[in-house]
Image (cartoon, rainbow, N blue to C red; front, side):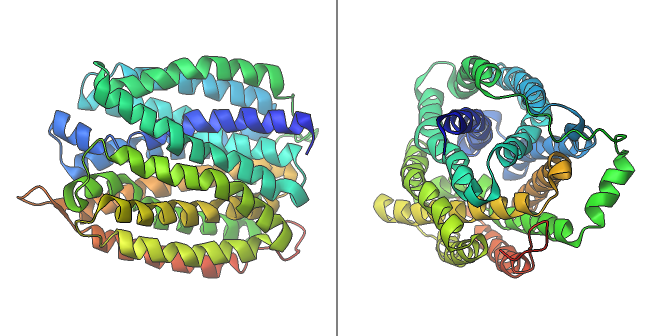
Length: 401
């Protein structure tokens, strides 16, 4: 991989870091927000899903214009809007203002991920894309190791409280925006000289491709299985497993450190051994910590962290190969539109999963949460189905993975 390619990937990883941290920090803030705003688990689920639903809607409509615009310009506009939205979250003073700010942030943040993946796919050839996706996925690890623990530290030790992490992200976004301007090249080779396709033609082009439909379904099922667990992981660990709010830092710190090392390795394995094979292996392995985690009683900290670490490693291990497979399933001329549609479906699915999980989880009189085990069964079902769907995936030219 050339120096220029690495600089681009590191810049895009930094973009993903702020975008992912903005999204991830909301989950461990759950116990604090439920206490300060005096809201139920269902109401907290609405805070989470408000972002994902708005991201899904904006991603859907962005799909009709994203392939008509230079990728760099698209990312620049989206990132500016994301910074503004994150700062609005930082000054939110009540439950309803926070929901409005999350909706605004989701409009921009939800499309950033699709744009980053489209840029990576344009810059890095398929045979080296697994490693590139592994590099991009390390943004999740860094957000876990540094971002979320530091954000929780700010939320619990700074006078601004839970506002502080969002203000921190908004400030960090300014120099990252400059790096986008400086390092990301203009990418307009995907813009067709032919007449631009109408929204109906774009949907028809995606819907008429069996392979692209399978790719969409795969990501929907992966997200349904994964994101049903995430919003209530932190509240469950505090209410049922015996963590304090400050202990939540260790979940993301330990899990993130592990995935920093494992994500690039898994990416290289996917390039060498086959993306489908590696996805299948880690998909099966991810079932084990999910089954344990969602039925975990009061447990010593070290054992609970061991389970969550394996959950991070195995769950994160699926996403790199899966994203590489999905990007390879699409004609480059439609890649931006498809990735935006895919991102839209994933965000809406995450919102639906969060809402469904919220209906399963209930706060008991003693402060514990019930129903998280049913969320686990729900997750296991969709994860298993995704393994079978992945077997039917092909590249855009019909080759097997």
